[in-house]
Image (cartoon, rainbow, N blue to C red; front, top):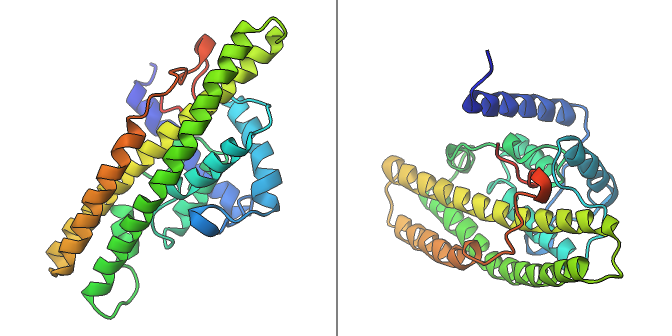
Length: 264
């Protein structure tokens, strides 16, 4: 008897998590640290090893993967996306490793945790002097996200505009061989898939922040919760234009190819 789609999704998630645990246990994923403006610090792993491993892993899963070199804007888009794809709290150590592998496409996006309680658990782990420090950290994390959405959106708009020119030229110029069409389409799918993935993770962060605030108020009521609530509302307002941005619409793949962020 064949599995239902939900069972297939759960089975894939379990396999992905087991693979993640194995890769991390073997030291395959270096612990990528955060650099300036929420972007990953560049090292040999993130610049050489992981991109190649991710390309072959994505190809093996049947996802759209282009061998084209990245433009400057495409590289920046991936760097800026990294912050939002990673867990919001640095104490989520295992999930940070999993998300880093997913960001490089070594693991599928489904391997990431979907538990909104993760952030709250990390936020309240360990000792702290007063409840105010937890509320302040929550508000700081939310505000940091909000300040980085604008630059990501501007970056995404440049990439989408360039992709429109790319596809018009690829499909309309007699000088472009047919062998260039598929990798061009794959790159557009990669770019749009990444933008949609970031929107998904921002919405996940919003839910995680709301969960954390609600449970902080229940456990440790404080007037500091007002500041955190306002920060969450501001983040939601800032995320709206990004997630409503008009894309080319090729996400999902031409010729039946699944997108970079394939949810099943």
